[in-house]
Length: 109
Image (cartoon, rainbow, N blue to C red; front, side, top):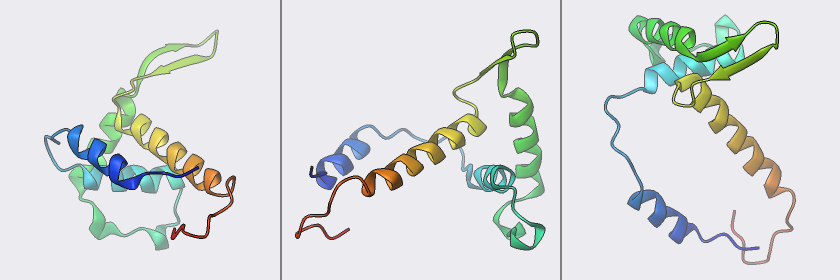
């Protein structure tokens, strides 16, 4: 099975959306929280205190619906924590899929 990177890149460029503001710092905070990094491994220059406050607000806003008795939790799909979770899962699936198919002689990745 071959993957056409040119077509994939073209589709990404055609369907790109404009980001309203830079959220790199917010996603750096989410990455630190999600991965439970040790304090020595955190790059504090990668985000600001405002990014930390924004991450706390988005974490509190993540649940859309919570039922205690049924133990179900519905999360907002547009929440940055949910997006990070989905992105991390997608990267893990791609990484696992690499091992599923033997490399052809002309594969360079």
